Image 1 (cartoon, rainbow, N blue to C red):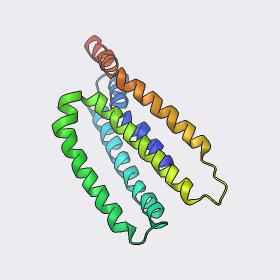
Image 2: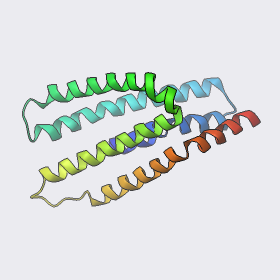
Image 3: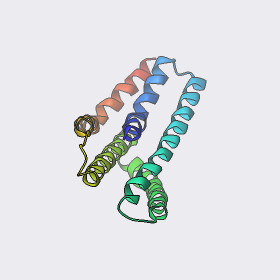
Image 4: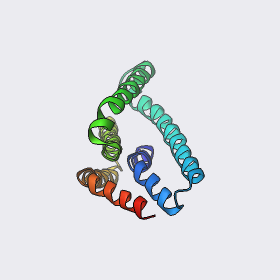
Length: 162
């Protein structure tokens, strides 16, 4: 579940990270490219870490889970790419889309935690603090979505003034 948390922080807030790096390093093209590519690789690797966790959780209740999980993963990636290119980016913008992706990761994590909780009913469960952290992060991301216009305007003012 830490993977999901890091995906929210890195992926969901990636646009903010890129704006901050650009401001801190004075619009240095090399620093921006290196950081953005590192961010892409890190998010890709962390997304790969999700699959074994999903397979393990699904495998506890059903057999032959690998094919179904991989199929859902590839289908979701394809549909997400189309939705981003044709709807999210043109309609609501890059900043809001980034926050929505973060919220989807939080919801996925909450579903995984609740699924794991139901599978481990007989054992003592130590996930209650995690639920609180994820709901807090969900609340923060929702605030970011509602204020994404102001956040984007803030960074635009920073670019214009530098």
